[in-house]
Image (tube, rainbow, N blue to C red; front, side, top):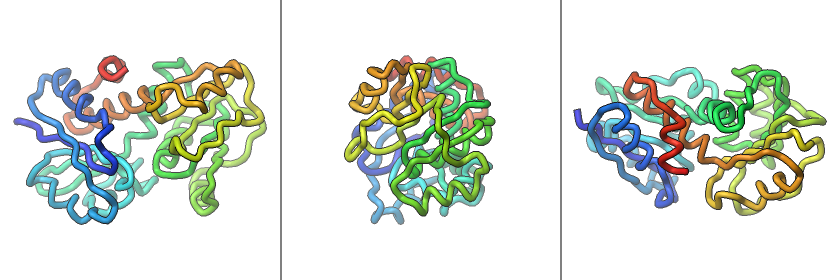
Length: 254
């Protein structure tokens, strides 16, 4: 089989997903191609027609993750809990969806910084789609507390209603920035110490002003390349049913 892969969203020209897909195909001993397709929110109706006709499987990025979930005949646990998908798979005439963002974040945290989630007190800055997936995985992996600091009170309340661990904390073991680059508050949160780990899930710029502020506070840090690579490993393992090496994929884009 020649796998027809792609990534959809808007803007999309910066996406590293095709490089990850091509590397994953090689690691799995499979053949295929991957391409970027720009689809803005108002063009969402075009997405369903791509599956099966042009693509066998797709990565989904913002702003389409929530709407893409509505296309799916089958959603797995993370996708059902978050009402969002970042991965689509057309199989036997049906559209399957999953969300590997959160598990990819947890995998990357362990692999790149040696930090396990269980028992940790975490601040998540932001309450949008990426934050939703991360909170779900943090809760699933036994985080002690997840303090969601988002500007949208309805989204924060949505998370608090679904996850018992969501609530305020005075001290943080991990701080995650899941907000867009523009309009960020680059002040270090109270409750951060030099043992706190800081992760900015964006990767352009590779070292953002937000990340630099935490590094100057003495925190170990990472950008979003690790999460990108490890969520892609989870995604492709789901598509193909074979183990994927997240660290090998990270080497391709680092």
